Length: 567
Image (cartoon, rainbow, N blue to C red; front, side, top):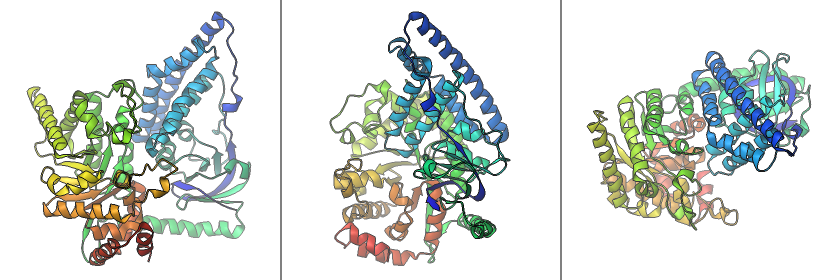
């Protein structure tokens, strides 16, 4: 039987299944009937917190020794979350006011926080729900609800679970655990990061996995293709060796695409990566990124009770720049608002938040918050090739105000004896039709553009892509969107400025002929899409791409654009 999922860690392996069952349904839930019982549960909770912190400290050390420094940072983040007073208070409130026992309170509080993350639009933040559940699971174990261990399993074990936490994955031994299959989890999850670091093939997103697979089943995992073969025949198993040779060929192909993306007629396009955190920097380089086209900073500001300070931000920006060495890193300044709110800003509820106070608009309202980030970035600028980009710009005045604040931040640093790089390129995201239509004017004020196709599509077509009633109208191939992109690139080039693209359109290899023909100077995408996009571009002609774009711009609808692209 062939089961399909998503490959989150490459490689092929054959092994026997060991299922890990969820513990949540086994928790003991009871109401507390007296003050004495409450005090007892609160004391147990404090002891569990202390024990969990000790465990995480040990896990960080173990991960540094046996897996890697970057992977250890995952658990350093867990330790920070565990030390967040808001988490402890949320659990204690459930014990004190709702009279729930400690295990129940921990389970409910962490799941509520996890659900908040899981409901967010952004995949990266959705994946953080697993980290919150990991912390909850650890606390519950410390409260006396033991976990199912896989430390003593036979060699070539394939671990099968509904969902695995990063802690569980880090506890696996390479000597025994040969592969991982789960129903939930994505390529940007910390579980995937740890699996890749361990070199363990893994596939996630397999529907009804636990209903189909039982302990002892023979399974062949193909982490490259994102499929598993349940109880494969002998012939297929024999072919594993051939498949391994194929894997080696694939690795040779990846090494090949570490070269620059140059079309057959000599037109070069820079291929960069979208990053959400420091941990993804190494992954980007591994997949052949020539720089970072979009480093999203909003994650630094979320899931906390106060904004990150200048020093904290400086260290993160510095580490990313150092990791990328002399390669360009475009940092997008705080892009918050819409569906992403910060509790410490006390933001008012807006009727149309995506049309409200978000992106650069919010930064210009909260000037000190913005200047703190700018100062951190300026301090980090001497450690690498930094470029700054302002999000959701609509007017020329917004750019000028942002640049004024940047200079104020630079002056304040200089007064403190800190010098920053003097020539940091400044760019803006083109995400709204007004900016696209005014591109020729805006280009005079900045050094580069980056086109955010997700929001540009949404605003151009007036379609909320998360509204299921109209989501089918969300179409990045709509000729209106393509015409705006084309106009932006042409306007910028007339001013001698370069243009990148960093929306989802950039990761779709079907669009390669279109993106080449549009004349983009840079395309940024999730790191895993880079090899395929580079290889595709290497087989294309720039001149034929230009001709294709002219035909596409004359088509009446997205359907015909797609049909033309697949010809």
